[in-house]
Image (cartoon, rainbow, N blue to C red; front, side, top):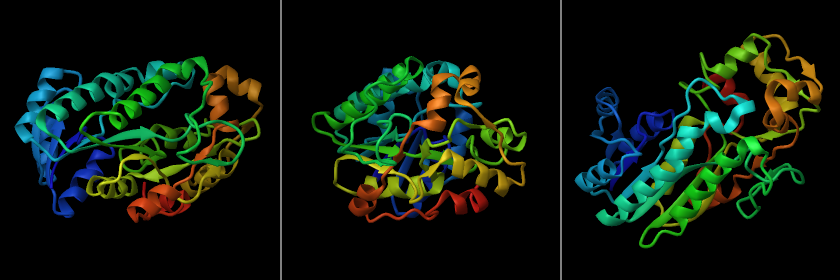
Amino acid sequence: MKVLVAGATGGLGRSLVPQLIAAGHEVTGMTRSESGAAGVRAFGADAVLADGLDAAAVRAAVESVRPEVVVHQMTALKGGIDFKHFDDSFAMTNRLRIEGTDNLLAASQAAGVRRLVVQSYAGWNLQHGGSATKTEADPLDPNPVPAQQQTMAGIKHLESAVLNADGIEGVALRYGSFYGPTGDIGKGGSMVELIQKRRLPIIGDGAGVWSFIHYDDAASATVKAVESEVTGVFQVADDDPAQAAVWLPEFARILGAKAPRHVPSWVGRLAVGDVGVAAFTEIRGADNTLAKKTFGWQPGYASWREGFRDGL
């Protein structure tokens, strides 16, 4: 099958392109730069140059490849996240989720693309409170804090656009929090550095539930989604959602760092705002049952405990 991966040089793209090739697909990676194109070719894929925000360039790229399936993995997150100014940290990613998605979608429809698989997210955007994990049938958080409203709007646009597109089989994969090489949760990553320096405390009761996924496992699920004919929203995470009060001390232990400090919520709010406090006290994890059942998929790292130890 001919597959175009937009965002082929990102953290997930670097795992996805080789896995698609290994599965026998003819892969082209769309990237913005010649250096990125060289990296794509090093994986054994073809490369095409286009900025996802340039509608004409995207249309020309898709037309030149004429793939059967397009995979949208375009993001722009580097250097960690400023929780107090969350939407600012995601400003370019939000543009890619809105304008970039619209550009890819229009180009795909014009070129006769059959299927479009996009990168969404499952974490802070899931409804807070209640059960420890949420399914795809549960609503997204109806009341995101002000600092996250633009980013929530970007996620909603991404999913709605692809799932309601005429003539396209749309799939939105809501990945858990990524970890692995090149990621914030990875060797040399910003979160690892904070934990090693004991600068990432447990805020409040630490009851916020996180779901994680290794890049390689996210890629293997994406290959399954590319090869499937099923449409809809699917949550891709490991089997071990965990409260911050559980995973953060264990991660520190794995890294050989001192145990994290504990601070009350009001102190945490001064440092990381309402977004950061909610991440440690209110958010909920992602139930992965539907993706596993639908795609016949299993994460290689069933738990972040194994992945943090061996997969960074």
